[in-house]
Length: 506
Image (cartoon, rainbow, N blue to C red):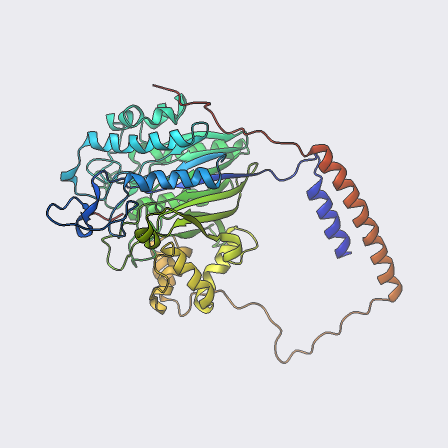
């Protein structure tokens, strides 16, 4: 009977009521370019590779592990995206285009043009692809200081930085109120581009606000409307909620904002297909839980294009990276993602920009799917599965550090950062004897095993005959369905055939 059910399920999957199959699509995420126009191949790596008169340094034309991205690296990354998968459904660009330099080296105009330069490069290589951008904490002047209300800054990002060419009229109107927007990816799926810099713990302008720029109220309204309309949502933003896995106790949001935000996305986790962030420069993920503690949502944290070494203690450099996602176009479910990187160590000696695949999430993490339950099992097995944890910790630096030193305390911080988004829960996790999975149920050692039920031989013959018959019928009908309904699905996500419209940490 189980065999019959499997065949029938297979039949239903292959040939649904409308004869369709799963509509798989692809999209890119690129984040944290941190373009530094003052990068020099002769510059001192200890001073961001800026020009050093009287001395000669040998930096690669594509960058240095102690410095931010030269334009050649940015162009290389975007060209690699085009070469690997030239026709994505869309691109998520998750912020931070401005370098990690002192505010005295910048001004508001430089900020606008810096972001605008990256905008132009993306549009040039992907002229027919919808690009959905969000702001990073370095994309304001002074850095981190996003005001709790509508200002001319957002209008200038649209005009001077050319984001009006990326966002439609309705999106641009909402964007002016606080740097956030909603857009339809397809009839079943929305993207909510958020400005979580408003909640950043280092933002001096919003610490006394309850809902800066009204974004939380707006977000709840969007999620409620999507729920009523039976649509799914993908949230994109720069700074994620929760804590940094490489710096125990460092929470990105102020605690009051973190509590509100996590509560809200947990409340609507049933319609949020995925949350996608940047900011950390490292490769990691987070697992959202519902009120009962059950894993209910995924937060994907993509590593940076810039290889820059953070000023945070114990945080190293990374290889430049880009990420390609597979997803279900109807539900927004992330089916897999593929991480690509540029091995900067090799580039330094050859000056050849060879982008390679680093890993496939599903295969290399040993997952049956990318749902939160499977990711939770993987994360909680890290402590007792050194081989899997070694993969994760190597990917965390985009294979820049192939032999990272991570003791039991370090490992515990990683696991608790992944599984707990609230400070109180994170601290509880750290203090548990062993933050691993509960033991699997097993028979008591003194319990007498039950004898297996005897199945008559004639029943085996009957079941096998029926199963074989159903299988043959399923294959025949499936072939008919596929021939009848498998057609080329035209690209449906590009809104424009050509461009339109007029000492820090992370």
